[in-house]
Amino acid sequence: MDELKKAIEEGLGSIKTEVKTLVETESKKIADEVKGISERVAKIENLPITKLGFNINTIPSVYKGYKIKDQCVEIRNLAMKDAGRFKIFSNEEKTDEFVKFFIDTIKALKGDLQARADLKDFYRKAAMQEDTASEGGYLVPDEFQMDLIQLARNKSFALDLCSVVNMSRDTLKLPKEAALVSVAWTAEESGITESEPTVGEVSLSAKRLDGYAKVSNELLADSAVDIVGMLTEQFAYATGLELDNQVLNGTGSPVSGVLTAAADYSVVLGTGEVNFSSISADDLSEMISKIDEGYQANLTFIFNKLIMHYIRILKDTTNNYIYAKPGNGVPGTIWEQPYRQSSKGPSSTGANTAFVALGNFKYFYIGRRLGAMALDIDPYGLFTNYQTRFRMVTRWGLSIAQATAFCRLLTAAS
Image (cartoon, rainbow, N blue to C red; front, side, top):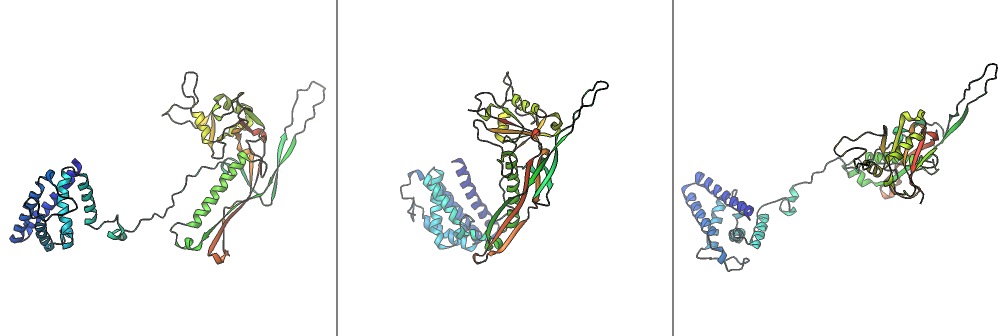
């Protein structure tokens, strides 16, 4: 109520300020007329409105002895002499609205809710505005930012951590060590023990990973956003995430991922622990201990952000957080090993489910046969539909080169 009263008083104050300006700048005659207006406004403000008995929708010509409509006609006539200052009162069609404005103002000051609503409606109609198209909104064009608000992008790890090699054919074979030579202590005059290394082979077979979309030519011509650039970025991003998915969860075509039995080592949660929330710092440490020292220089944990939550809330026997206290800096390692969160890490808990990977991902090979991330454009295939087709075609070969470089953490069997 106080805010409304203040706003109305400020509005009346602005009228009086305009009156004062007229008094100072116009002739004596106009000044006298303005003085009369000010006096009548003051009388209307002082009316005993609590005793008002007429219907608010009926504007009286006379109220409590004051010729309201006649007085407002005089005000209107004066306003017409300076229409630039009093635009809302400068034509005869506005007279009734002006009368109602004064009555509603007084009633609003007395706390009449309907009068307040009518005043709000009056102010909305009284001047041109941008909220309503026909009253000025058409004159205010919408602002359009040329930048596209993108969905959040999860950082891909596969092309960053794995060994990426170029392929010039559909198959690339890489020799690898399978076993090393051995040495032995030999007694005097005894023969040396024979030992030869063994070798193996990593085979990368290129498989196609692609996508396709069609766009109307009208959209291509009219859009302020770079549609081609947007599609190129989205296809490339989707490709990176799918490579992450295969590195972790692949089931044999095109590759078996490190969360499958293709990893040489596994750690299983305790008996009956079938939920991801049962993870402990001991489990993570045991995973590290499984992997030979020679691979440990570049180990990285990979897991879903949900697993990161369970790690953050691990507590010791005195109920203190192990990983980091709230408000402290976030550690960049777990047991001195770096970690990466991936949206492709499992997030649905269950029995016998691998959900954390640890490994030296330099021993996971990704062959790039066709991975330039170029967008092919076909403007003719849907010529009669006036559409353009876009496709991105890539080819990749994937394989674990050394299974002993990887360990997975699983929930217990049910």
